[in-house]
Length: 426
Image (tube, rainbow, N blue to C red):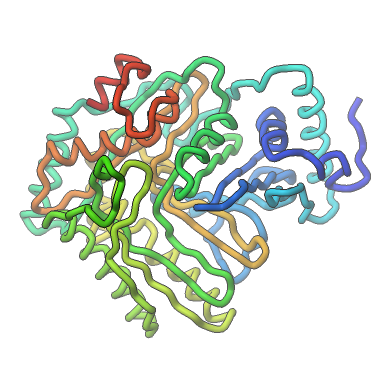
């Protein structure tokens, strides 16, 4: 018999720790998002209680508090999913933000029942439908080194023929899940390993479960200031880990300049003169990137409108798609054998305490019942070397593989990684 709670958030739920809340939401098959912001002391989470999340264009001037989750390429009716913050764990306690309604009550009952069941069992391994790319366990096209290098060569040829300036080409790695690992434990590992990244766990029925640790900010605003970045160029961090000693080649500098010009041109078209800093070398785990920051200060209403325009104009960014954007997207759709789904889309908290922070969904994986699908890519320019681009995807894959299989951060030894996966990252 179901319990009837007098409000959308009973006193017992208020005191739940974040892992309890997320695991209960997973067990109840309720939409949930957990995240740890860069350098934050604690993680946060929202649970959407009142029916399926809705697809809609993101409007930051009107957005309800919650969490946005958008795919690589939007299409009419599938622009972005919005998880309402019916329950918000702010890092200290659970706070109800939604009104009292029948759908929220039903969701709360499911959450309470699931938490009661979990008191007597180990954390379950969720078995949720996969994303738009197909059913869980479906065949996945994982490119070999030769196949990926041939794909890069086609991209370089298109650029040299004048069809493109840059294109970002991705591949997928299928990795068996280690025994007894559940999504919340993997989220905790990622948060501990990569304190400077935006770490996330998003689970939506009918969409799937995604986890990641991304270094790339799309947009951040507190209602007074707006910040975005141009991030491009990748190389391994030197053994001593000092960003100041990283030296960049012509290819990486060219890639960064393309992205920076694209963002700067957008602001000029809006009649806005942002404060610009960089490029600077930044560290993300065992990798180094080039980053240029842009910051704008405006009154709240025009700033909210500008923030919405930033998302519409910059997503997908040149750092994950290419230039010109439409031509690069068409090349990707024509030549990448595996749909990206939410890889290189965007995600993040929206309108929570007046703040929004959206990140590009990089260094991410899609969780399936017995395997994880890892998505990695590299930016291709006219001077790209296919073997070097393959190696860049290898470095990026190790960000997640080292945590998935609990190896050392720099992955000096790949022994714990299954042989079939090791062959895809050597």
